[in-house]
Image 1 (cartoon, rainbow, N blue to C red):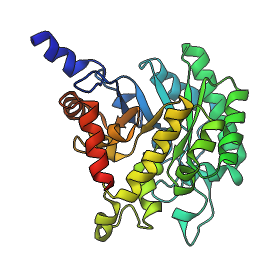
Image 2 (cartoon, protein in one colour; image 1 turned 30 degrees about the vertical axis):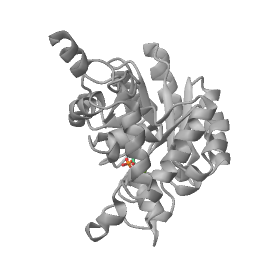
Image 3 (cartoon, rainbow, N blue to C red; image 1 turned 45 degrees about the vertical axis):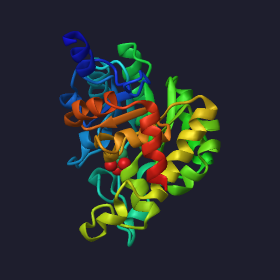
Image 4 (cartoon, rainbow, N blue to C red; image 1 turned 135 degrees about the vertical axis):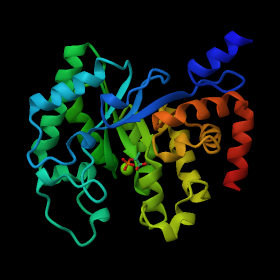
Length: 290
Ligand code: PEP
Ligand code: MG
């Protein structure tokens, strides 16, 4: 019994009946890594460079990515997510009247394509240096065409797996087509809620609209998970909802294959899943959708 308890507290994530759910970490740098997860589901690379006045060089990026690849087995790197709540002064992006709906995330590439080229080069180099099959995803992908263009540039550099974040309702609605272009999806429920309910994700007066139990949000997540199941490709959640022990089983019931969260959330989510069967999770999902 003691061995089972230890396995449950340290081993891979799974439900009471053994259905595997990868438990991954959201990190901003190598310092956030913890040994009790199965890898990194969201490496927020912009956190490395938030207060810089100068663009990080290729070499500086290679060293930051190498540090993480050297210490964790499975790492999903997100390319720079600049704009709105994460300003990167060195990019010198013009001020906009509506920044959340403007040039942010992958859209920065429309103005400054060199930034993404250098970052993909640096990720590919760090992957080569450490022998890591890098997984890379872009934030704020909106159409399958954007996903395809991003995937082409990443694959041209030998990056092993290319993904798209689903943070915009248009992307969720077209999940099946997105998955013809990329190898995996990762749902950013923080932004997906913001854009689905037209409610600023930081606005305290709108918290009820931003609640991840809102059925409209769950329905979009279900669409993505279903598309992933049909394509045989992983679909995870990396927004804050994934780290909530009450919501995690519901997300598993909707069909997502991994949950990526702040390191401090891993033990409670692992325990919540270990206490429920996949059927229990599906029932929770069904009643939440109702
Ligand atoms: C999200 O939007 O849910 C997400 C994981 O990305 P971030 O919180 O960094 O915008
Ligand atoms: Mg986001």
